Image 1 (cartoon, rainbow, N blue to C red):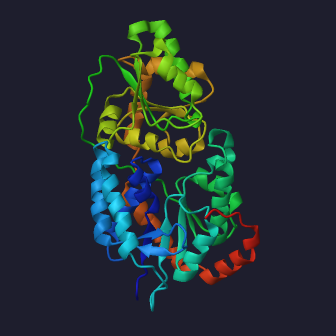
Image 2 (spheres, one colour):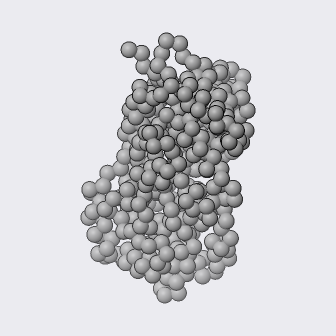
Length: 420
């Protein structure tokens, strides 16, 4: 019996590498690319969807593998911009020599995996690509936050995400989500018969690494892009209060993550609040190796988010044996299970009490969480991807004809809002 291929779209990963700015979703796409190359090398193919053509193009396997190795080293060393040149060369090579893909002859249909939200707003282009290749379409949806909490996103992001989900509803044969909470939020936007599979994301932080900076007093860590949804404002006001109460004895707060959008109040505090100087340190983006070292020596990871689709920093912290204090959100409870302390992201007083308790050298609350930690186990990327492959293969066997999807989508084409 012949086995179908898996086509992984790495358009976003290459484009972001060209720009030298990589985020959590790019890390997911990189993990898929690396893991599939090991789990299913004979079935694996790297592809890109043309910007204008609506055609899937095969990428040269050797060039992609070299790019992935280079990108992985650059990421772990904290220098993602170092792979710009190689990413640009891969794009040029693909344009010159990469061949367009059609329907495979005398073989099961391929599975087209799209694990970022890239292209999902381009319904017509995706429909053309699926019709030309006969591929089974299985996207990974990370969250529905732009629709549930439009106030935390960039202007226009809610409508853009609505278009993404409309594309999934019309064209997908199965959907992967990172948490049951994301699946529940996504379900109202999709046909009832469309299979949704929950697969928690993997964790890949190194276990080695040495601290790059000497810490003269206890510190806490906050990890994530600086944006309103992450609620950095609560922590900065909390730290200002701690400095008033304890002066030089106050613990430090280290912030890992790039500056995002709609952050005027937060950035004013980071840039101009003299009371926070030497107590709050903005580290920006750091390498995975350095992040692992920072986590292992922290009193706790702090994550007071208002909304999350998964909460990868929680899993990363627990994988390093680091206590977690986070918001009481369903997605974070899925990740942390019974280990972290879950607090109301609006209650500054309970956060202050928790930070003061965990900062103490002989903290009973921190010791209690450490005692709960042996029962927690992280999912590896190999486990995650293997689970998705099994699901996608099952969808491939059970899926309805892709022609039905395209015909149905074509009937509604007049109602599409397109972005080419």
